Image (tube, rainbow, N blue to C red; front, side):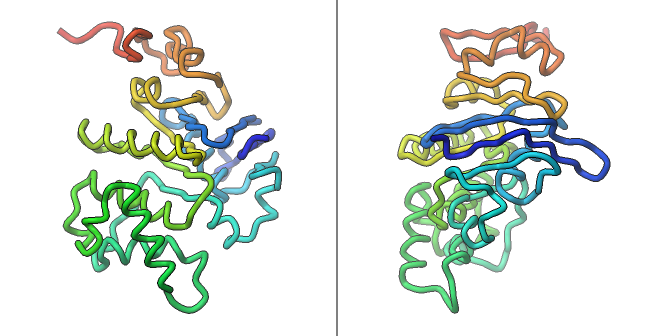
Length: 254
């Protein structure tokens, strides 16, 4: 049975219909990439699966149970959500920041187990050596790893990432995507919105393409990332090179 099921979900932001009758299933340990042009509904879909937004129509299920049946604390233990933008809390150290991901388990104060789980999360993202460093002293790539560690500290079954490699240089992009793939290979379900289609081709198990709030295509990368599909979705011509798992502009500037 799928870990995440989205059934006929429509979401409105004010008077604007951001998602239209979306259907989706994500299996355990699967890395799903959500693609589409700006305004296509990627972030809205992630926020709806994470319980931040409520659909006007349709239902989201986690492990066969309706999302609305979960308490906020239960949901926080099931889902780790990393938004597209998160301002660093400058006064905190890295460990203090990652500990805030344990709030769903805390009754009065952090316990020894909370510290152990926070350090374990930092080890998973290769950032244990940053534990005592102020957040303000981190590079962009380091901060992105730490944000993911904060989400992992809640011991989630599902990790939801909104454009985790945006504004990072190529080195950090590769590091983050390798980390995300390791997490999915360990059995964690990962849902991530992404812009870099070559990264999508190389790392995703399944691709969901949105256009105007609707599902345009869903399937394996080689099924969805075709030149015709991408032209219809983005309105531009590209070349797909399956032998390199790469997507490039159809005509490079001279």
